[in-house]
Length: 180
Ligand code: SF4
Ligand code: SF4
Image (cartoon, rainbow, N blue to C red):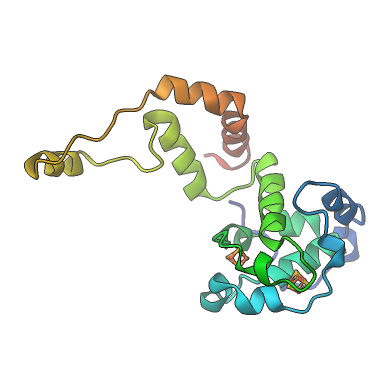
């Protein structure tokens, strides 16, 4: 992913896209974004925010409300959310915070912006059907331990699914944007 402005860098007026919050308010999952009154409950209860110095769901939502579209979509912190839904359960405004994060990620991915690790997992699924390649050593160990062999996938069928769902297209966008 490209290195971008930090969420804490000063905001320039030219960055603000006033239509962004309206765009979000029309997408399934982020309809209630304008109802966030910045109480901070989502951040204070978020297990990732407890261990990260940069991940703050409240901050991402505020920046999205302000229209800082590019900055939010290019933020690496967007991908730290573990989708545990604690924030959604505790928001006093009944906002689906985790869904907003999902929507923001989807918008980023549509632009071909997503972390290398996700691209690698998607490529691994394309090639082998598994998100992580299974080392030969582990397969040998299973045989030694008399464990059943792991089921084989059909990468061709998986390729068809990834093509139809548009994931292959996103991978190509990533390669065009950030590939070497
Ligand atoms: S808990 Fe809800 S209202 Fe409070 S900051 Fe988070 S999203 Fe906004
Ligand atoms: S869903 Fe994401 S943002 Fe919400 S509490 Fe869990 S890790 Fe934090």
